[in-house]
Length: 114
Image (cartoon, rainbow, N blue to C red; front, side, top):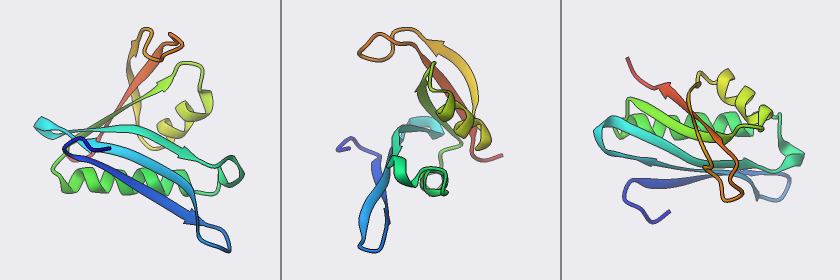
């Protein structure tokens, strides 16, 4: 989170403000952004929090003149893959042994600006 161009956004919810989700991203060189991680508490999933976080991160990347954004998800994370596809991301490749448990990742991409 201390890298140049990195940012963290949080979502608060509930009757007493508490963190229910977050997203970490970074704007890189040559108009390319990266979503590093996103997570939402299980009890508030499917209520739009993840979508709001993702849109806010994409807006932040656009403000930093990023034209594309990339992210990774585990090949067996069907819920995340469906979520990202609903938001306009598409799979561009598989990254072998991406995670510490040696699971492969799908690399996804989205064009942010025409």
